[in-house]
Structures are given as structure tokens and as C-alpha cells.
Image (cartoon, rainbow, N blue to C red):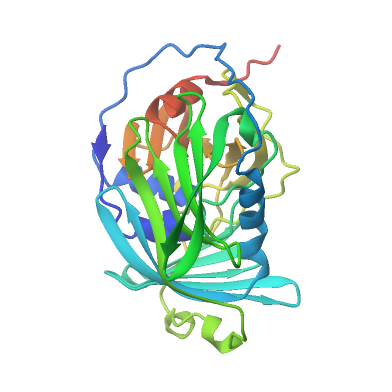
Length: 358
């Protein structure tokens, strides 16, 4: 397993969430040996249901980040790297508007209007456009669903602590099996906003954190402060429009032989292939790639399947908390990635096969 630096990918992973573009760029940034094949078990252990301790606090968090105006500065750490970013979030006429600017290193900016996300990468003169309806809100560590969460996590309320000058209730999620990571949340007792979050690996080591250092909740926010600074400087930029296709376009050609406990399919669609998109500009044709997402309510696994192409980079890559597994199957490139243990991705990815038709 080779670990690669985040470079401009931190903007994609942290701010835009996990994308097909991220998967390709991450694997392409390092020479990775092909992974050895492991036998994928079909029957996996199921966790034991637990009580509802701490669930009420998580429920408060889910709505808070989407329903309030706020602005602040936070520090994001992934592996051995850290960055400071500034976020401004406005709710106007029931619609979310958000601007996120990375303050350290190379300039990066993310603008979100509803479920459309635009990532500006001025150093490479690239604009990436995503459309998200399954996991697009800040921060990406927020639970997407509370349904059934206690079956696979022991959720308990911890102590009261102080984060960014505000009282925070600690909520701990301990996984009941080895298929997922643990989590620790610090929830603002006043607003319900997530002030700090940490992801814990199999050895209980912290692999990813974000924490506000300054936060202002409520009050008026000037709409002008959410405008992108690079929109007037985009002549000659490369535009990668990776907006997902219709969720009605299901991918029935592929068989998923392994069912991970608690992970259910929450997205199934066609989207533009990044492999065919590289080097193209707006309006260029691109082949479709299959895009599926599986989630247990807090952890998610993304699967991208597209034509293999020339000289594909196969194997495994780790970007802090994000693991990526790439393999070839029947003339296709299968990319499986998510903030879950490497073994989880390997077992799941090795169980994906092209469906044979009678």
C-alpha cells in the first residue's frame, strides 16, 4: 500500500466529497503495484443491535448545518497533512448557498448552490462541476441517515468540552465490526452544529479530523460574499462536468456478489467518464461510467465502472482516511473508494463481476 500526498485533492475529498475525478487523479499520482487477489467471502457477520444512546444528538446535527446561516474558519487534517479553510453558509428562500476557500498552500475554492458543486483549481486552470443529492453538505463527516445506525455502531454520549470557545457535547460511535471506522463528534450545545469531528481506524488511531477554530452562527450574510473569485478569470480553463446522470439509469450489467452488513445502495446512475473527459473542454463528448454509492448512514463506498483504457494504474492507494482500490474486469476499470478499512474495499471490490446473460 502506497500513501500519496493530497496535493490539490484535498479540495476534492474534503470540500466536494469523493468523486470519480478524485479516484483517477489519486491513482495516477503514484505508481501502485497490482494488488494480490483475495477470496471474497459471500457470507459476512452481522452486528448485534444496540440501544439509542447519543442518537438524539446526531439527529440535531443532521439538520443544523443545512438550516442555519454561519461562517467560520476550520482546520482539516488527513493523515500527516493539515489545512485551514474558511466557510460561509447562507440559507436563502429555502435554498443553501455555500462558499469554501482553502487558505493554505495552492488556492482552491468550492461553491455550492443547492446540490450543484463547483470546484475551482486555479493552479491547474481546472473547474470541476459535480451534482450531489446524496452527500453534498458540509462537513462530509455528517451522518446521511440515522436509520439502523445503532445496529452497527455503539453510539454513546461523552463529556462536555469546549471547542472554538463554545460548549460541545461529545458523541462517540464505536463500530460493532471490522468493516467500518469509528467516529467522534463534538456538537455545539447551542446551535447543534458540528464543531469538531474525528475518524478512528482499526487501532483507534485518528486518521482524519476537522475542527472549527472560529465560528459565527446566525445573523445576516451578504450574498456577495458567496460569489466565486475566479469566475472572471477562466479563459482557457479546462472544465470537467461530472454531473451525475438520472438516477433512473440503473446499472444492471454488474453483479455485486458481496453484501456488507449495513451498507445499502443509495445511488445508482450513469455519469460522464473521467477517463474519456481528460484533456477535453466544455461540450466534448464523453462515454458514460457506472456510478453507484453504498452507505451505512455514515460511511460510504463509491463504485465507478468504465472502459479500461490504455495502461490503467491498478492496485491500492491511501489518501489519509480515504482508501482506493482499482482492478480490471472484463475490459472495464472498477474503482472502489471510501473512508472505510482497506479490507472492506478489497472484499467488496473483488465481488463485483459482469453479469452473464443467458
